[in-house]
Amino acid sequence: MATLGTCDRLQHPNLELLLKAIPVVSEQNTSYENFEARCPLCQHWNIFNRASDLKTYAPIGGLEVSCHGCYKQIWITGDRINPAFEMLLFDARAFWNARRYMQCILTSVQACEVFMAAVVNTRLLYRPFPNQRSLTLFNDLSLLLYERTRRHTFVAMRDLLLRIVLDGLAPQDLDEARLIITSLPQRPPEVPRAEILAKASGRLQEDLLRLANSTCNEQRNHVIHKHAYRPTATQAESVMLEAEDIVFSLKHDLGPDLEFEDYANAPPGRNQ
Ligand SMILES: [Zn+2]
Image (tube, rainbow, N blue to C red; front, side, top):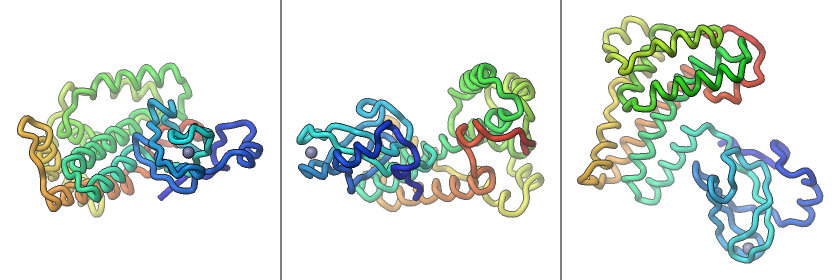
């Protein structure tokens, strides 16, 4: 599991001085929303929320915080640097271990949705960016793509991903990307299984079919809707394992780099 060490991302100008004076936590647990850490002074288990307490979503390479138990300053470090969809999969496993099977299913399926959005964004925006470094245009197109897809259900997002991959949509710069994004349909038409069989082969075909055949979103809906279905351990595990299979296999096929940071400083190159 990837983590950030104190040397990877300095968040304080006098790191060495601080490390001498401020106790460093050695026991922590990080999730998509929170950074939890035991205070080395009073042993209090702190839960720092990234949005409200830390006020940053960036991975914590090192940060001075105040313990909620003894109110002394402590240094937190060693955060995960995984993409959001992987953090959510880790959270789903933690929910399963804690026997919170409803949350496990919700988070597993959410991880798939976040992953699908990451692939679409990478293909249509991140990869073309190094060939046309206009941040203004990039931000405009990000907003436009978000507007076009924000109401997409799991199934619609899946059809969009399949369409992009099977048609080999790969804009070479942001002007090309704009043409594609502005012509995206309100609801992507269903992609027939036969088209996956015809246009993809080998491992990619197998992995796209796994995504196309998944019904994990329907199981998620049972949990979300009015009757708030409470799944068994086996049902939750099945959804969790399927989500992991989908995300990790397709990340291998379609990634591995699926975040803007992977492309922000990359040299110009061919989007393929
Ligand atoms: Zn403390």
